Amino acid sequence: YKRHAPPAVEALERKKKVLGDDDGGAPLDALGKENPVTTAAEEILGECEACHKPWDMYRGKRRCPTCGVPSLICRSCFEADRDGTKKLGRNVRCDLCVAESVTNKRELREREERETKEYERKMRQKMDDDYEPPVQRKHAVTRKPKGNPERITRLFLKNMCARQMDEAKLLEFLHPARVTHIQWLMDKSTKKFYGSAFIEAKTAEDAGSILAVDGMTVLGRRIKVKYQRADEKDNWPIPNTEVSSS
Image (cartoon, rainbow, N blue to C red; front, side):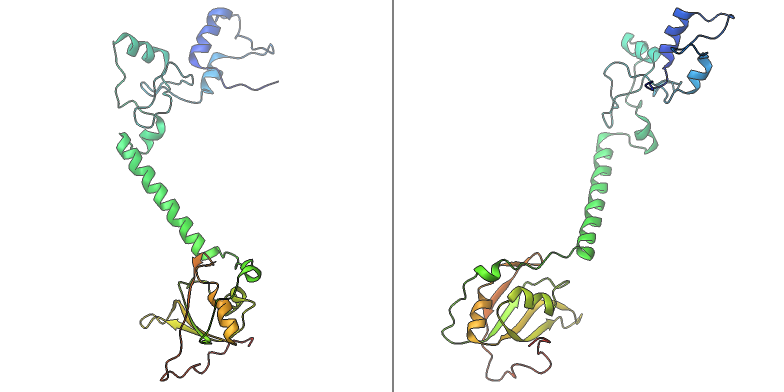
């Protein structure tokens, strides 16, 4: 048979009036078994928010003045509030607001904002640490190489993902263009890669193909690419910048 919530105090009192409560024995339940009032009362799940006696039946439309959930108010307190003999003040709040010492809506909003910000902070940290978007390859077939009348083979790339970009991912993103050298630019103080690099394309046509990815997204960042002719004083390509697959 279906299980139902334990009867509330009000329901038990109605049951006593109908079935009686004499010494002839305890009232019987729907299955004909003894169902003492004291046993059912002990199973009541809640209490009145005003007088704190056992109670688990919602009455009327009163809500917690802080969070707005329905208030659990016993019949006596409900009738006293309705008749005006003992009004229910704003200090009568739900169990959760009392337990968390939330006394007004402003405190509730501030707490919710703190919890939301903390959740967002943890999610951003998880995204930074664990999430690695796939390198986009669909543009490799559809992109058209840019013009390169001056036959420049050195390019400057910036706004790359400093945490995740590496040689393998960059070469995969630039495919089918061929790259022979990569100079990863490091921050002078931290000595960490900060998202920019100089690269040397194998041919001018490869350089034009690489320029065509300007403005495309890789690893969640919109990459910037431009031709950057090496100065006559530059020692380019510099030693130890050859790509491993060149």
